[in-house]
Length: 244
Image (cartoon, rainbow, N blue to C red; front, top):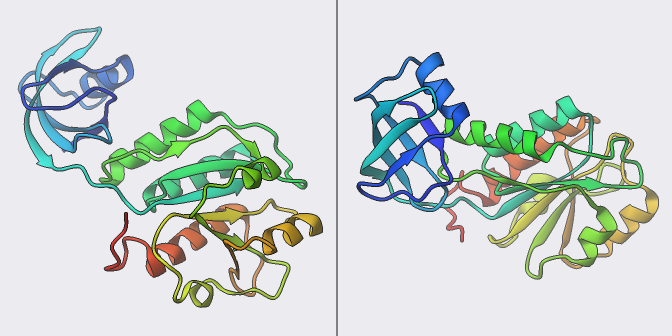
């Protein structure tokens, strides 16, 4: 059944009109009509089965008939990714959404080659990935932020998995063994690596856990996917650990 994300409140009997893009997708691409059913979620009210009541050129009108799944939320892990070229960044956001990241934060480092990100486009990619993978929320994609500023305003209690490929860090499975379940962030550096000053500062943080992704040099998109996968296996919802 088709799943779509909507910003509207969802409750029994709620009636709403889908936006232009969703209307075109349902009516023109998927050939849905009056009486057909689909699933909607908004990240707050769970997943609802709705029925199409009307189809016009301007909007598809639907009515909520039953909750299919109550709202749940995945582990509190965010991906901090040094800005890379657009194509790779889009892949990273898509896969981060599929792997359950709650938030993706592009970061500007000393060796970052790119300096901007199309957050609206990246959010659309994250939304589509959430729709396809069955998750009940859409990961937030934030505006790029300088690494120094990010570290100065660090959220208390959030631990940092720092993927350090230039030092003597332990492999991620070893580094995460015995670590607490709770808010985490995973930091992936730029293609040229972190500068010596950045590495020194990151390694000095009490909440940072340096780790390596193995003996080979990985591109940023591969590193992000690998790190998120290993974190989910150790501390996320791929295990029986309870997550907040």
